[in-house]
Length: 244
Length: 244
DNA sequence: AAGTCAATAAAAAGTACGATTATTTTTTAC
DNA sequence: GTAAAAAATAATCGTACTTTTTATTGACTT
Image 1 (tube, helix red, strand yellow):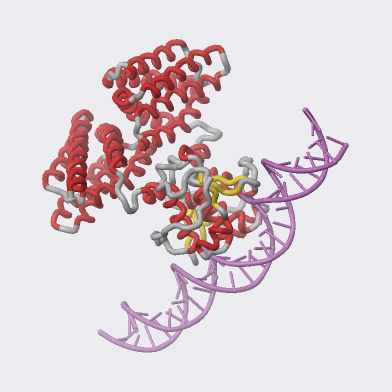
Image 2: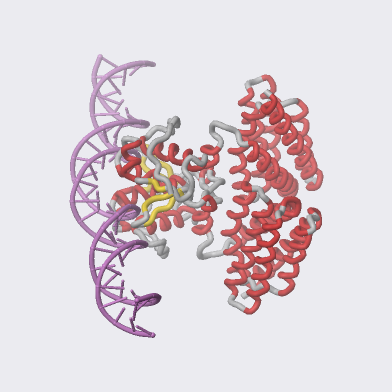
């Protein structure tokens, strides 16, 4: 049960004093600089960050809402056990993978996508409306248009397609899961340094075709192929990162 | 852009004044009593709940952490657009389905489980350690032992088995998703008024056997059968609820 | 004498309130 | 049309007070 006084802090956070404390502490916790059961002395923190008690308390409250810290009278505020952390929370994901890239996470992300996204494609094929179809076509067109533009546009276009497919699946719970995945996807793309090849666009077009024709099995298969290709790209990038 | 003054409040919350405000407002938002873009007047709220500004502010901060509200100077605090809500947050799920049961949600939950859990079983079959196996056997024994006991024990035993399987799959990201599902499962069980039949325990045993023998495909198939049966039970319960 | 239970004390979270600061939008003046 | 000023409100601050939980102590029982 260590106490936490001094450590290098490099996060800037959003803007306010309170957000700075939230992201600094949040980053420290999810990256293991602070381990579960460590004490968080409130007065030490307000000195560390040069903010008032209110700011520290509200920051701790936010972290508590994400399951990162707990507090009890006579015991103090402390880092919560890892099982309680809301690992799917957008902020938590960002804090975990802001600077470095975790290869284990990339592997797990690939597995989850390989499980979830083909199912999404199948559901979309069964339930898509004409409106969904139009959105998907727009997204695909955007992907093709992004061909000659900066890489960040590729990422956004890719994400837009998957988002449209998600809406077409008409399962809000599933959509939430995929949205959580999205944070991971942006990270992955910065790791792989993804560029949309014409091949990639073709694969997406294949999915769209199956969805339009309401061929559930075909949509599922096409999406699986797409994700498997994506995983292969990540593996390739890992080799490059490892050998340089 | 309505303002929110008067409405029936039945939630008790955890204990403190601040938690009461969080759960009351959270429930009101996720259940549509407060719609996105509605204003949340801080001074009105402190009168409504007979608490100080501090309590209201910290409550709003917690809700902001879950993406339920936003705040900007000159504009005030307001209900955030639905896309920003952390629908997988444990509290949010609980608030949404505390009292009534949403049949649409049950359908969506079934679909998600049918997608995720067979994949979990497959992964568990490939990666389980001996320790994982022992845990699964303990969980199955607990399920059988719960046979003659209150229904709540059945639910906990069932959940414990799925949790052990999740650990055996060794994919933390996937585990988080399933944990989010767990909140839904408790709700479902109260809807179905689930009782563990010996048949149910046998099906679980089938999964365990496949996992022990590291037969990925068999584990996946057995789990799919289990979930399909579970979905059938929900459908049956829906008919009963509908016709009474 | 040893162990258990209850009353009490202490420590830290939680609550409250009033004042001050910062930020953003609207208005007004040039 | 642009820029500066004003107004509205969230954000922050500091301090005092309250509640809750746990540890300690002492009495009581076996």
